Image 1 (cartoon, rainbow, N blue to C red):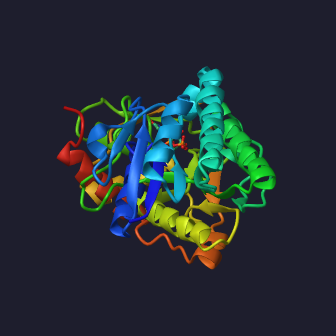
Image 2: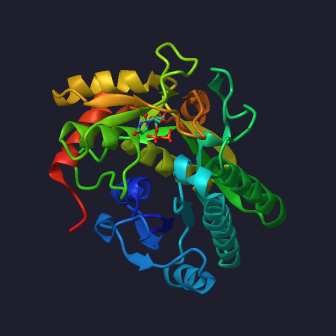
Length: 327
Ligand code: UDP
């Protein structure tokens, strides 16, 4: 059985990637410090509880498990927090990735699938973003991911590191079997916050700004189902295993929805109205981020099959009602 080292495998996207890997015959070995992830989410292979700052632990993990590749998810990933604490983003994300890349190369494992983000693009006047679009991040989250992309490129030139970089748009939904799902403490992401407002765990969803230059004034994002994203990672891994070299791919659907439209869809998907009110803009937010994902379709044969808004909200709602993890 081929092993893949998965950093952040106890987190939202990492755990879904582990499930997809296991279903395709790989053994996912999770490395996670459990600062935001959950041991209960690690169901498809062993868990090594370690921080990416701990080079010795990384070297041991590579030696003990001899992975064919690394999937690197572990990172700080909140735009709001990144505006308040940029140092945390540069330290955790950039230094963590540097340590990991050096450990992987030292262990003779030159294949990495890396979680990047559409936040590397910043604000681009409503255009659909292609992989060739300008990179102009608005916050330390996006800046730190852009820096890592550049680092991986440099290691590619010097040491033969091969990387598939995925720039995610807005990841949503949950495992359709509700075995794993999204669980952040505190929760800040739109769809789970909306579900908490529906079932009374919070008073109301606060819409962060309704004076953006969009058709209804609220921010537009491109939402993609976490199961589709996990599938893309397996395809990215196969791409590397086939020796096809380093490549950057956007992962989104190509369709943008405003916050107001997401709220409207929630009514249909859950049968409940979303209590909400308008608040000020959130620093660091772009008005609109929509993916051009033609490259992933053409080259990886990837299609976002589960990514209708209704389906994503319905799967997130099923997971939410199950009340998975803590406790
Ligand atoms: N959003 C909102 N209220 C919330 C959470 C999010 O209005 O309580 C908006 C946010 O400003 C953005 C969109 O929903 O326009 C998606 O935000 P999220 O935090 O889910 O993901 P991000 O775009 O930051 O990756």
